[in-house]
Image 1: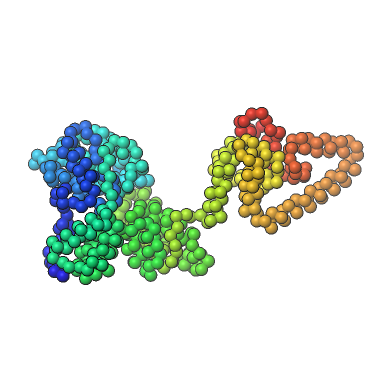
Image 2: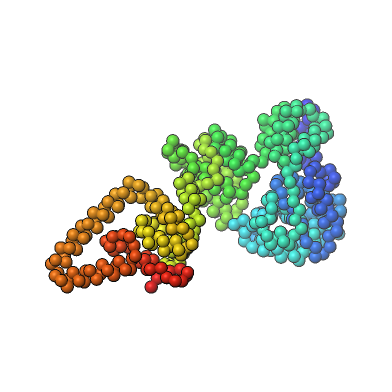
Length: 487
């Protein structure tokens, strides 16, 4: 092993390609960018480079610019999220040449940061710049596609980058080892390739660390992890520092990290197994969420490193499994299996009550389910309105009632309703005898009116408990297909 640490330059910089032909992988993308820059004229579309970190986007811009005589003005767009900040920084370059007369290429890295919740006009200014700039404009984003920024995609020449294949990566790393005069075992070399996940920068950093340490153990620091792997590794870390190191490797946005940490903790059994640890985990998670809100409001992006540490304190030692879902299975299964029917029923009922669908689902759905359960005539009418099979709709309503009350509670409610109904009928008979013939006639007329209005199979006493705002749904079926309205 002949590596000389006294040279003082990291391998990623020492061996950074100076020419486009020296790069590895993404040959078609490199050729497309070089052709775009060589043929660029005022009014031409900007170039938008999309792909994962470490695939050569930044290196390509600098190498191509150097070959064609351009000076690169490079900015990280995440640091200039407002229109004023971007305009102030870019205005000096709008003349097209430097003070020495060299042409200028503007390179904006991480433009995906302008399209997050923290955008304060920067994205709009970027679109203006893309359509009016008089100098070449190249942009890069770490997303694999531009679906989150369709306007910018439409206005740009999109050049996509892919992760470097393992075989090409291995050949490139062997080439670097020959240049450095360093020998490493095939196992170490292939491990560096495998754990780099197609990220050239991470692979070179790992290789350099292994060259100095004699193994790959110290070379993991710059590896990029998927969100799943990062959350899992953090949860199985014995210390917050180790969990922090894993979260820093996550190839994910801060908001996605918070959501994934919450979902993993919420879906675990940690609350039952260790309530105190679960409470501490959610306190740290709350701190992370509050901190992220403060970062968004103040645009102090330097605080992001503390956010990862708060998440690390929440996850370290919890041994929870990664989860993409933050709702228990019974709630999720309700959405999956019954969502289609409820998705048609709720808007109809909400419209008839002059409520939003969200308001109805939150405040009125449970009451409706308790009332409609077992009412075959009503369910048949609703099924006709929403175009569903009555049996399917009844199953959904009964399933909702069972979840809401539980089978035992539901049985108690039905028994109580029957007792109350019988007691009410006895009281009505006693009252009728006291009031005489006129009272009985009036009572009979009232019962007949209620029966005609409901058309339901329930007892008259249960109908008396129906909230007035639902009563219009008990009218006989109409000949129109319009939603029922409140009278």
